[in-house]
Amino acid sequence: MFGTLSEEAEVKVPASKAWALFSSLELGNLPIGKIFEGIDIVEGDGGPGTILKLTFKPGLGFSYCKEKFTKVDHANMVKESQVVEGGILDFGLNLYRIRVEIKENPKDGSGSTSVMKLTIEYDIKEDFAANASFITTEPLLAIMNVAKEHLLKSN
Image 1 (cartoon, helix red, strand yellow):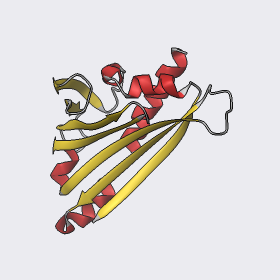
Image 2 (cartoon, one colour):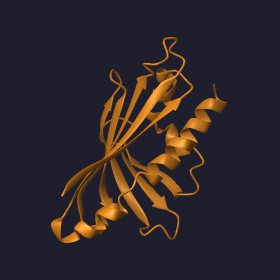
Image 3 (cartoon, one colour):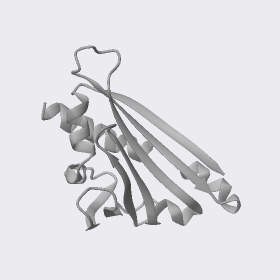
């Protein structure tokens, strides 16, 4: 069973500034303590092929996952990563992909605001279809909110 979830948020910084954060490994240095105990670089420099190990706080249902960056498109400000081990995959998923897209805000002709769109694509095995309820944008929204606060403070 294939599905998608997405969220958008306006950020009061230029798209280039938002992309500089989301396209780099700097995002892992932000205080995202409600979800993660740690984020470690397993391999890579932030480009495609980079693998991160995300260690979750106790009580979230799983202890860790490994996420691989599969696309970092600077021209279109699109980054995709895929969980390749642990985490949500342990709930019967074949695929869990996160896409971040940063765009100039079409409602703002000055270029001083941008729109972040976060999309989750997932494919869950039929035998585990009931676990689809565990798939939520809530962790992504928490990360997006921390990133927005960081961007506003550094603006």
